[in-house]
Length: 278
Ligand SMILES: NC(=O)c1ccc[n+]([C@@H]2O[C@H](COP(=O)([O-])OP(=O)(O)OC[C@H]3O[C@@H](n4cnc5c(N)ncnc54)[C@H](OP(=O)(O)O)[C@@H]3O)[C@@H](O)[C@H]2O)c1
Image 1 (cartoon, helix red, strand yellow):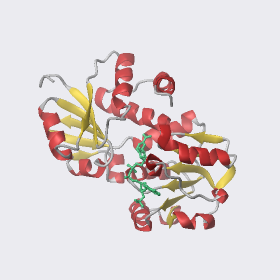
Image 2: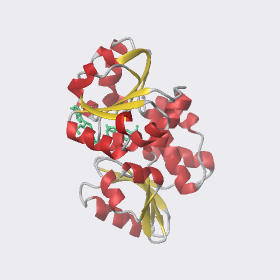
Image 3: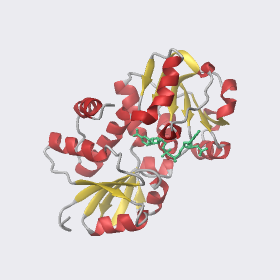
Image 4: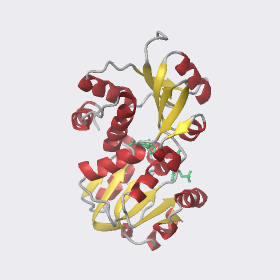
């Protein structure tokens, strides 16, 4: 890669599965911007060195995926509002010789929920399953969208508590373990933000968390989303979705951060559903 060509990348471990290069290529075509976007696996050099080498070679923007979102925030000279709230970043931009971080996971999920699934979040009770990077990224945006309460249920109670404390929202954000869910009532919106499905594992969830019209969204897509979405359907839930919508929306926000224009996500979402067989 010529050092003079500005380019973009997704950094993570692993990244071979990432749809980001395809999504940003489609956005670029739509907006008339020639986008060079790479996959950079950090297994060999580690995150900091991979990022440094990328910047030296002309890298000007990066998406950060697991497990580097917290480390990326540490390497930034400045953080946008959502990244500061979450303490983690999923998007970097190179400006004036330093990295600046943003978090577009929350804005991406909100847009998906409101526009693709037509759910007004005002006064809703939300169950967030998981307390890792994805949950940390979306929780502040959900709370600010006017929900009445968020219950964060995680395998490790400590991590759920840390997230609830960070949100600093008193009773509007409660932490519990997955085994306490039968005592937590029912929810308008259930967000599956764990990585259990990547290992083919199914969370043990009680039927009591569902209401008649609950919206169930798994932030994963493809095979990793199957255990939760299959569970929701088996419980006769009619509104079930995977994380492809959020993926495309958070990518569009990253694209806008880098190029100053937000692409139309619908054609890209529809194309991926077919071409990636999702
Ligand atoms: N659609 C999108 O745009 C988008 C964006 C970001 C992430 N994601 C997806 O969201 C998922 C989570 O990502 P992340 O960054 O939060 O990962 P992470 O930081 O590694 O956190 C993993 C989470 O999953 C939980 N977990 C893992 N295995 C489990 C199991 N067998 N049973 C119960 N809980 C389990 C962990 O619980 P403990 O704390 O107890 O270990 C933790 O809460 C990933 O699969 C990722 O692909 C999607």
